[in-house]
Image (cartoon, each protein chain N blue to C red):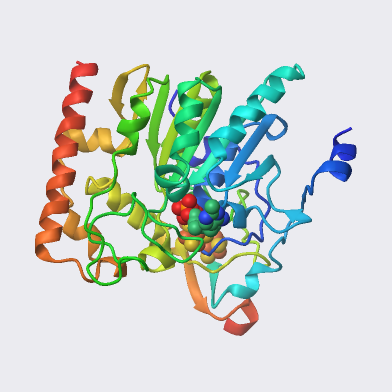
Amino acid sequence: MATKAARELPSQELILPGTRSCAACGLMLTYRHALKALDEGKTIVAVPASCMTVLHGVYPITPVKVICINNPFAATGASVSGIVAGLKAVGKEGYTVVAFAGDGGTYDIGIQSLSGALERGTNFIYVCYDNEGYMNTGTQRSSASPAGAITTTTPVLAKLQHKKDMIGIVEAHRIPYIATASPAFPLDLYDKFVTAKSISGSRYMEVHAPCPPGWGFPNKDLIKMGKLAVDSGIHVLYEIRDGKFSLTSRSLRLAEKGRKKSVADYVVGQTRFRKISDEQVRRLQEFCDERWEELVKRHNKDNG
Amino acid sequence: MADKIRETISAASKPAPGEAGRTGDWRSQTPFIDHDKCSQKDTCLLCWLYCPDGVVGRDFPLEIDLEYCKGCGICAEECPREAITMAEGKTRDDVA
Ligand SMILES: Cc1ncc(C[n+]2csc(CCOP(=O)(O)OP(=O)(O)O)c2C)c(N)n1
Ligand code: SF4
Ligand code: SF4
Ligand code: SF4
């Protein structure tokens, strides 16, 4: 049952105020609503080195009310495998184990341990919050950074390669649930966490998490930027349940009514794209259009 | 048992507000709600929904926890009735 209004969300906050993350952080808003879908006493979160570690605070205090285990950068998938095995060994039932890693920790350095965990069918939810760079250490390029973006490791030509198809790689593991989400659409995001929690086996979610200091846009525009990403087809909202593909929320409406925003509308408000050439915008548009056509076709085929 | 494990094998933090101090001090602008302009209906609550830091209340008239509000301005930007405005400064008194 889809959540239709803010008031239907649980009022309980599992993150106490006064956190270390930046003002207007897309990851904060993501985590806030994700935790509303999970049980306070029955959730174990695992995080690698990232902005998420910073959000979780400095010993001996944390703002977060669920159990969280910090891990070495590459080890998240291995760590959750151990947590799940440990819970089973001591006979503890009803826990949801959730990994929360950045795109650097997922697309690049954590991909091996993640693939291992998915291949074993480990019973957990893996969330990649994609802020499109190594933000915690100062906006270095990752394989999730979009083509045309200036990062501190692509300062001259801007990034030349398109974002890696991480979801394609994850899908090749044939896991029961994959979803994309955005904190600019919190109700859809919440519903997907509720669904993910209700399924057993390996589940993967990818959340597009705008980052004002890393992307270079005003704090107040966090929601606008997240929406623009979906409206322009840079990020598409969908879920794949046992192989069945469905567009959701705004992306479903765009498939019915047509897309009106372009990649040019999206890049213009972000200083990381200040060096993007017209040719690069055109190629990024092509990249998004091709993927959009494929996804709409797949939606129509599976929901025909 | 859990506490014993904490003491012996791991450095485990305990939850408390203000982990990073009074983050309201980060603010250079402060949000104000005009309660006459706010719909005061729980069919809206967009300011509550979109505040990344969860410092907007859910009971009307709405209150913002200015001890921790980081002054990002999202609530003001997203309010459909323009009931929230950002004013220069860290506190209400700065503005009055
Ligand atoms: C093996 C290793 N290399 C480098 C680092 C330094 N480091 C800590 S966090 C981080 C960036 C993480 O980027 P990402 O996973 O995208 O998460 P984000 O910071 O964007 O939240 C790096 C490089 C580390 N902790 N361990
Ligand atoms: S750098 Fe970006 S992702 Fe990291 S805490 Fe700041 S806004 Fe959030
Ligand atoms: S200014 Fe930002 S932190 Fe403060 S109440 Fe509004 S949305 Fe929340
Ligand atoms: S978004 Fe504006 S109108 Fe809606 S509840 Fe908040 S202050 Fe009131």
